[in-house]
Every structure is written in structure tokens, then in C-alpha cells.
Length: 453
Image: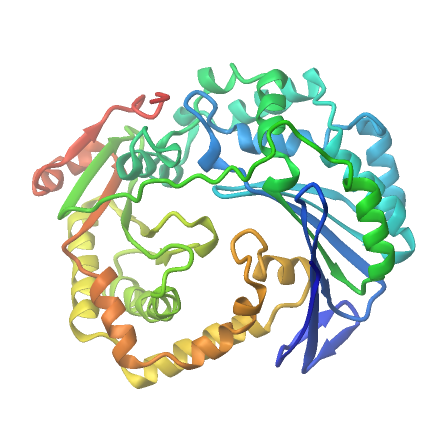
């Protein structure tokens, strides 16, 4: 079944040569007989098309011992295929003035290509062959893995990355793929064989979404999509949905990992946050903006504890957590913890004002309205995360409907200072006296992340 709908959004959209104060966003969805869902989004006036395939596979799908394989699989699609070897593919893309891009994250992986419409047939030929017929050359895979090990050895990580990795372990545990970290001896065991198996299981028609965005020739696109993807079949035909257990937070929990040569200390707090489809999401995003300002003003500007501190939250990751991160002088570790506790407690107690709500909504609205590229449009209407495109189109109306009372209820739910996990990375000798003040401190050995389960 095909659906065609028109929506009018007041968007400040610029695409290379044009800036529009309003843009009519027209989209169409259809499905091939093999289950592949396709989304077409009309955007801009430049004769170009952005194509992207979204794969419902990422870190969440990695089994013990295969940490990092989702990223290696996505990268390996660029190494050549049955029709174009790596050199021929690179030369052809260069002649078109474009690149084939691969990315992988927690929830999904993607392959994308932006091509001039006059070269669309050549572009989709390269694109489809990379997705459907990768060759996974052994030597290229070995080189990729070797380079990864060289630059991602836990012993060479800076203190921020070290705190992040141990925080993942502390928060999620090794029973959850988000808590398992890659390490050299484990990574070196991954070969082209394992990558192909991961590809075969996850890169299937029903487990992917195909998106085209730009000034589209829909008749041509539909014909070529059927030609290049219509006969795509797989023995693993279903949607590989993974439902990960949400982390629990019971009081204030503290973890520590030592780094002998550290001249500063890194602090990484983790707290509960909403996930996909949660009714609290919009109110939480508004609260995040206000909280970040208060955090910076108190800890950085007023107290001078650090050069920078901030709350981080990525809705698309669906980790159901948010983090607060900073680095500070070792002597200021404990006082910085108390300062963050105070900001959380004050925010929890007082909530936000009408003025703060108005300013936060304005900031979010400007972010949404400043989308200025086809890939940005595709990311905003992420077809895997937001399968209901019409609902996503209504986001600005949802933003405008928020109230102070509603936001403050959400703040009470997520911003208490009494429940979090804090991972600390620093020099134990310099921090010993302060660490003794933290009840129930859990100390991790430096090799604690080098486990699979």
C-alpha cells in the first residue's frame, strides 16, 4: 500500500544555493514484496539525491566476544563487492565527486550516498552493490582491525575515554551489550568470517529501511529500487528487534578506576532518562536545556571548578540514561561532586520558570528549524526510530503545548540528586583522602573492562 501526504512546516531550510522561509515537505512510503520499506522525501531545489539505508543493527546486537563487530561490518561494506573492487569503486565515486559513507552506532548502522541527479543511475548501482554484495576482503578487514587496536588500546586511552568505558561497565554490566567494551585480544579474534555472519543475519530486507531525500524523480527511483532491491532475499528474514534491560539506580553509587599518571580527575555521572516513544521525552528535552545552563553557571562560572561541564543525552541512542561529565583538578574532586549534587537538588526542588520554559522552547525550535541538508532531514525523520512520519511532523506542535507544571513533574522524575552512578577516573594517590568520603566506593581494576560476559 502506498501513502502520499503533504505537510506544511515553517522551516528555515537551505540546500546549497537556496534558503527558504517555508518548505512544503512531501513524502511517500511504499514497501517491496520482500518486506523492504522505502521512504521518499521531497526536499530542496538542487538536482541531487541523498540515499541512505538504515539497518536495525548496532552495538545492541553484539554478542559476547564480538564487541565492535557492528562497526567493522558497516566499514567493510566500503571495501568492495562482487561488481566493484575497492579501487574501482573509489575511482568511480571520485569521478562522480562524491563518497560512500558508512556509520554504526548503538541502535543502528547506515550506508549513505549523495549524488547529482544526472548520475543517479550510476550512484544507486554503486550503492546497491555495496549493500547487497560485499566481498569482505580478508586483508582489508585485518588492516581495519589492526588500526582499531592500535588507536583504542585501553592502556592508551585519555582519562575521559577511560571514565566513559568504565562507566558503561558500571552502569550496564557485562550482561548487557552496552556494558561490554572492546579490547585488543578480543578484537583481534574477529575475522572476515564473523563479519560476514553478522552481515548475513542483520542486513536483510525486513531489518532495513531505505530512504531517498532531495529533488526526486520518483518514477525513476521506484523503477530502480525494484530493479536493484526487489530480488533481495535472506534466510534470516525477520526484524531483529532487541529489547535491552534498563539500568537501575538505587541511591548514590560510586565507582573508581586508577590512572597513575593522571594530573586531573574525570567525573562521569549517569542517571535515568526516557526512551523512544516515552510521553516524557519532549518535556525532558526542554528540562535538559535549562539544567545544562544552571549546571554551567554554578559549577563553571560561579565556583570555577572546571573549564567545562555539561549534561549529555542522545535520544536516538535509546540508552534510557543521561550523563553529566567534567574534568577538574584532583584537589577539587569532592567539592565538585557536592556542587553537582547541589545543582541537581536545587533543580529538583524549584523546577523551571515560565521564562526558562519560553527560552528553552525557542532554542529547541530553532534547532529543529535550522535543518539545512538532506542528511539532516533524514536524521530528523529517522525511519527506524520514528516509523510514524506523520507524528514526527507534529513535533513543533507538541513543543508548543508544554507547560511549566508538566515540565516540573518530569524534573521530579529524572533529576533527583539521590539516585545516580558516578564513575571517577584519576590518580588514586592524589585522591585517596577524598575517595574515603564516598560510601560504598567500588574500585575497578584497570583490566576489568577486558571481559566478554
